[in-house]
Image (cartoon, rainbow, N blue to C red; front, side, top):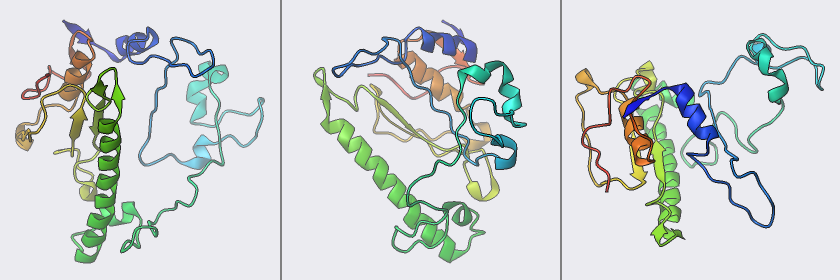
Length: 221
């Protein structure tokens, strides 16, 4: 097996390794793919958004870094999540925003609200897993055919630690039902898990980014 770089990963995606397009009464490109990237803390609006609309807008400082791809992307402003704000008023017992609560400083009241909020997040994940498990595709549950990766870029948000990340991997043809507890003082790279996931998809690689090999203890069915 060879090392998988980000460039090789992108080439594999273009070759249709990771997704297949399905049609419902209309023709689509057989190699259509989607790639979603999220920047958890957002960006400074003044540096990201152009000041003009239309096709002849001047690139903002951040978009200037993408000038060679100007005709390959559309930048959008003004979009929003309906009825969503920095707080979670729709969750009973939660009156502060998630970010505020994450910097709890061990305040018991904030910790209690944080637990309530994050329990709702986990319940939403459980609902997704249930729907996948109840959906059958080619004689298997969709959960068995889908790797569901749940995690965060931070381990302890209160102090912005990137150690001891909360990771849950469901489905996808692995032997689950266990807790793999690694030594935080000698932590394997998160990318080792990505190597295992890539191998499960049939991609022959022993490395990806900071990964040193597949994650020990995670076995395929």
